[in-house]
Image 1 (cartoon, one colour):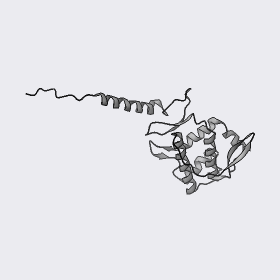
Image 2 (cartoon, one colour):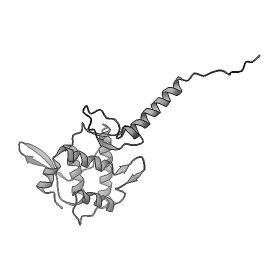
Image 3 (cartoon, one colour):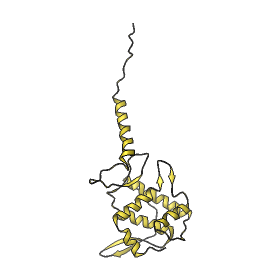
Image 4 (spheres, helix red, strand yellow):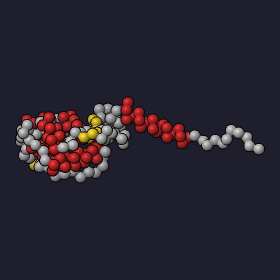
Length: 183
């Protein structure tokens, strides 16, 4: 299914682009070890449900390999680490007074290219990955000063702060001698 001009204009909206990137990165739940993209069929379904592939488009093992590389590259980028991204079918197109990236072709690879285009358009100051190492869930920071560190203060923030508190408490304990007198 080739990308229509209407579809790409809809992708230009920053919130939609950020949500697509967040949802794609979150197809792998680091904490539980589950993965929505565990097979080519799972990838094809995920892309179809988001309008990034047509109803008859299938994915191959190579498409799945590209998807996983793209996803983990984006997760690394959200951690503000450098990341290598796979080559995807993209073209540069004149748009008004500037240029824009557009996916080329159809099928799973074009859908993955659409995710890459969304990543370029997304507001990266708002896109983050949870700083709790056991979580790594992508989220959109909606705080006014963009200072959120965790996907959820109730869960991940609480875990991190409790761990730090316990470490401080353990470090502040002094070794005490025996309470019995020896002669």
